[in-house]
Length: 222
Image (cartoon, rainbow, N blue to C red; front, top):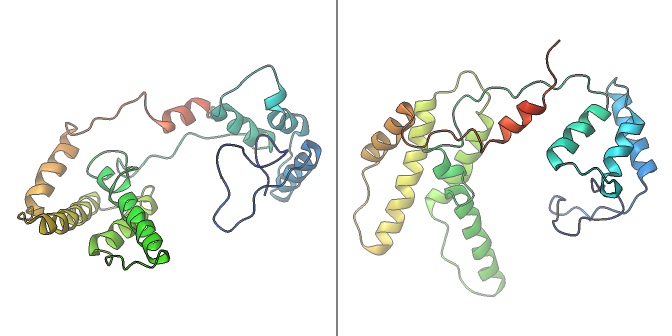
């Protein structure tokens, strides 16, 4: 593995490599440019070595660019002649009720955190509480939501109802522990989905969208 943009060694801030993979090794810019050009040729493209070198040498350049621009420069340097606009989403995954699952602190993220804590307790010789049913359901639904994002035959109402069912299962487990009554999932669904339909629940913020940034950098269709 090679770290971009600085190819001289692993990133000093984050660990980008997948679990179980070694850290990126230090390599020369020329070596990485040659490998990238090889990838490009294998795809039937013609890389621009000077453009690739400019991207990889960016840290030593006086002309600073944000990472968004560098990524698009890299793709163009690989010989991609046109970068289209983002494909339309089948449903607003970044709005409620879907963010109940997909947010950083949504149910899927909480389920993974709970699994990490259970693993740590087990390694410490303790007996962790078993996973609750909503945890696996939340992780599986998150995977399903992302897999459905660009499909044309998505049943948005059914997906929204599944989100609410997982949320209701989570609430029921939490309320059972606290001795409170469970929330009616049908009532929860009606209140959340009505706001999704009329746009009042969580309207889109055009200034907070990675898709907007990508579309601004897309190559115009000729």
